[in-house]
Amino acid sequence: MYENTFSMKLIITFSLIFSNLLFGQIKVPDDYKKIPDILDTVDYLYPFIVPDKDYAYWRVLSNDTDYEKAVIYESQAPDFMTINEPVPERGFFQKCMGNSCFSYILACKNERSVYFSNEQQLRDFIGTVDNLPEAILLAKTYGYSVDTSNRFTGAYKIEDRHISMYLMQSKGCPVVKESFLVKINRKTGKLEAKSNGIYAKDENCTSS
Image 1 (cartoon, rainbow, N blue to C red):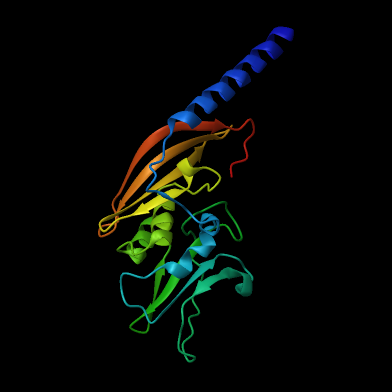
Image 2: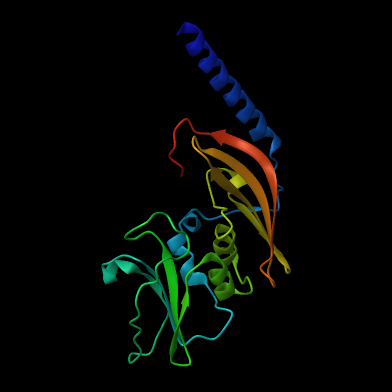
């Protein structure tokens, strides 16, 4: 029992030292700015979408059974326009099975309803990457997210052809957190990513 406890303490101590070494090794260039804290919440990204095609009206919804709670965001629409369509079986950013577990987009084009209900369809809806929130949203469809508590998981640079960001991925149980440099082609939406290494490991199965 004593040996097991000692071994566990040794492993934890080594992990902390290793993490601190990585903190020092991950250098973010000075021309990268901090991602605003509010942009680490997905629901706040949707209002910044500039759809690649012309839609008369569109809204982002969750599969919540309460309609008032289901509407996450809706664009400006003429007073006479309404869309009442059934909820799809699955959507993007699937968190669980059941109520309020995923999101989807319902748009109106040429007086017909169009669904966008998976990650690839969300990328198609975004099209060209016009701004930072769109870039973060697109990166999220590939499993990357923002952690503004560190520069190496919450910094960005916007150029004419690309938007580059330092983001994170968390995987497994216990959760392992890894820093990435993500580069997105603004015209095509193509994403390239390079790992900066694992910087944290939680001792439980709850990811942020």
